[in-house]
Image (cartoon, rainbow, N blue to C red; front, side):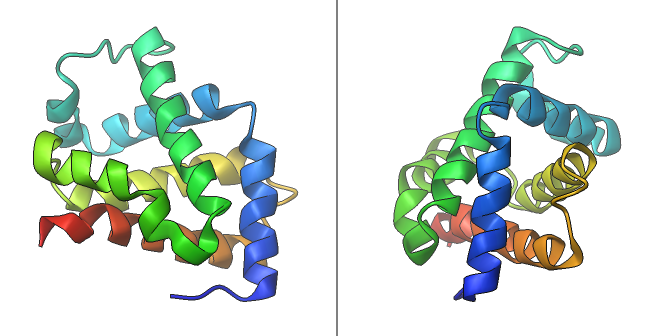
Length: 142
């Protein structure tokens, strides 16, 4: 999957806006995930999933930083997320369907926080990008 120059600009632009707010945005996206898809909580029984918890902020921030790294390596997302992909497939064994649900929650959260930047072009580019991120994360399951 390749990205056009306009898509790259939109993806990197939003990633740069998120930078510095990863913990808050990631925690909010995870809270949205757990609210809308409560079955996903089973993978996080060892964490405090209460609103605003340090665990949610830390894990959400890690998720968003990984996505930010991928956004700045659009030409080689597979390599940028290789370690994370290995971890999820081989150790954590997260249901691959959860990645699509999480990326949808991330998309909604980003849209809420950065509505000015979330143009139709940015929306389409981010959706395409997050689909690629999901694809990479499940690639090692095969």
